[in-house]
Image (cartoon, rainbow, N blue to C red; front, side, top):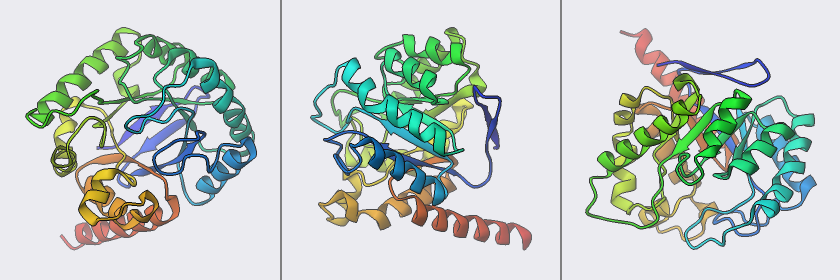
Length: 280
């Protein structure tokens, strides 16, 4: 199902048959995959420019690692890391910028600096004020499922659906139109390997929420478990495989570290899909 997100600057971001790729800019020293690589302002901005040149439709900027066991970052430190990068990217790219933060104060400052989308890994449940920030700015919000602890006994789909329903309620009650909400099952966040794989396998079940779906399996530890690849950057093939499967199950946005190969893979997948439909 095609969706369209209205951005604060009046543009519309179309989410149609071929998933949009969201490129990742981690302005952190400790992210699980590329911590420290883009910590400097110029390095981060240049990396974001490169992602757009490779085909990224959104650039996601984050200033606090969310890997297991990460050190929390105070609001001022997080803002210091991301705001100049967002402003620099805004001056040099056309693609919309998302702020990867669960803190309302960081999101508000990032939107003022040039971000257009809020990406909250706690689904507006850690700091519910973030929903009002998005609503006031007229920005779409991405609501991700998250858990503090793994529970292998959970019915993971019931858990994710109920969590995201609560998140959607928080957002809509704060004034975010339902059509401005994207949902994310949160691959790798408080889930077993089996639960992560089940979520990707049955991703289309999230369609009952009536929102576009974001899938972010890029370089995740689940893929390392499957392939035996201990180094996250060596999980490209596995990342593409997981994301193509997710695309076949309705993912509208793919969040990825490696944009160019994902674009090639998705173009090929879409061409095959179109060819198959033409033969019917």
